[in-house]
Length: 187
Image (cartoon, rainbow, N blue to C red; front, side, top):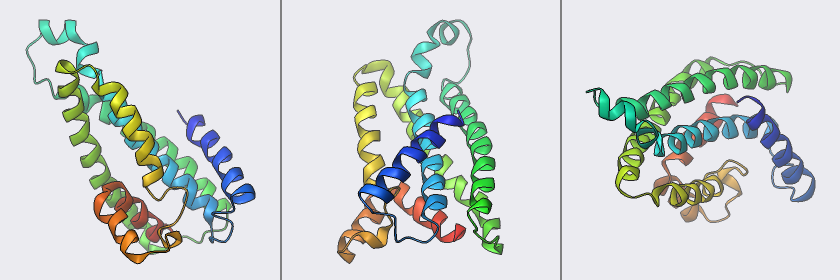
C-alpha cells in the first residue's frame, strides 16, 4: 500500500515540476504534493473498496445477524491503518525536504477526523447503493478521477487566478478544504 502513493507522487512530481511547471515555484512542493496524494489515496481507498464490501460478503451478511454498516466501517478502519503507515513515510520525507517541525503539526491528526467522517459517510452510502444499483461502482470510479483533479492536490489554490473560483472550489469540494488546511498546518 505504501508504494502506490510514492510511485504516483514520483510521476506527478516530475510531470508537474519539469514539464508543466505547475509546482516549480511553490515552496516545499514535494512535501505538499506527497501529503495531498496520501490523504486522497486514503479517501479513494476507503470509498472505492467499500462500494462492493457488503455485496462481496453476501454469505456472511445473510448468515449472521449484525448491523450491515459494520462492513464499510471495517473497510474504513483498514484504510485508516494504511493511512497511518503512509503518514510515517510522509513525515520522514517532509523532514528530509527541509520542512522545520512546528507546533501546528500537533493539529494535523485533528484534520484526519473530518476526512474520516466524510469518507465513512460516503462509504456507507455507496455500499448501500451498490446492493441495489450495480452501476454505482463504475460511476464512483469516474467521480473519484474527477475529484482528484478538482481537489487542489497537484496545484495550490492560489494558482487559480479568479478568487471567486477559488472560493467555489473550496465551497463545493469538502476534500479541498481538508487538503488546503493540511498544507497550512504543514508549512
